[in-house]
Amino acid sequence: MRWVNREPDRKQRLALGAVPILLLVIVYLFAAYGRHAGNPADKILPLPSGMATALWAQMTKVDVLTGSVVFWADTLASLQRLGLGLAIATLMALLVGLVLGALPPVRATFGPLVTGIAVIPPIALLPILFVALGLGETAKVALIVIGIAPVMIRDVAGHVGTLPREMLAKAQTLGAGSWQILIRVALPQAMPRLILALRLALGPAWVFLISAEAIASDVGLGYRIFLVRRYLAMDVIIPYVAWIALLAIAMDWGLKNLSQRAFPWAHGASH
Image 1 (spheres, rainbow, N blue to C red):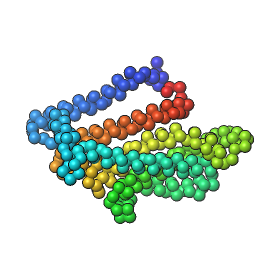
Image 2: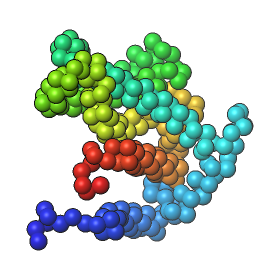
Image 3: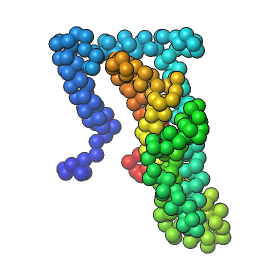
Image 4: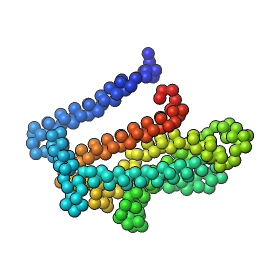
């Protein structure tokens, strides 16, 4: 059987997916123990025991100013900013993308503007946002929205714009107007694509969040990582990065399952 025709089952996919992760862990352990054999005080590649000790310290350490546990306060602050930014961007992508994709005159008018905004590097706008909106939460959330919303809008609009013309013609034959087509035809077709666009935007959203927190914040996962880097505290940085990765994976998994359960017809027979 050719490789292109081999479809692993669930257990095989889990096993195959675990192989490269285990290889990376093994390579890291060999490198870390090799460095510590030559220099027990090495900070660049901390041992698992050192990372566990440092992470536990962060998870039990209470901030004297706020009275909150540092690790969980950082996590909560980052998730609040990320969640708000994702929610606003998703709502914008649904409303604007739906209208742009389904209504050609609107697409011709505002499509170039959306495209122009989408290609601007969001990080370049960070100083402008801090000047215009201050150093508070608004600028951080705005960076996430500006960074991912235009791309999500283009994705949803492009998907809606490629809906079969026969589908729209049948709806109009049955007497549907423009807004009825938007709600009854385009919206159901756009929802799975919207969730996919949100999944693809998770990575960039985390990048923009960490960047904003690193520059102007006093709490958050990005703030903590850039705070301890001056001490070369890799035993804190690596667990924090791993925690961010786990949060992102959990969010992606949740969105994937939501899409499969809510819109099974959009995922084909394999799901």
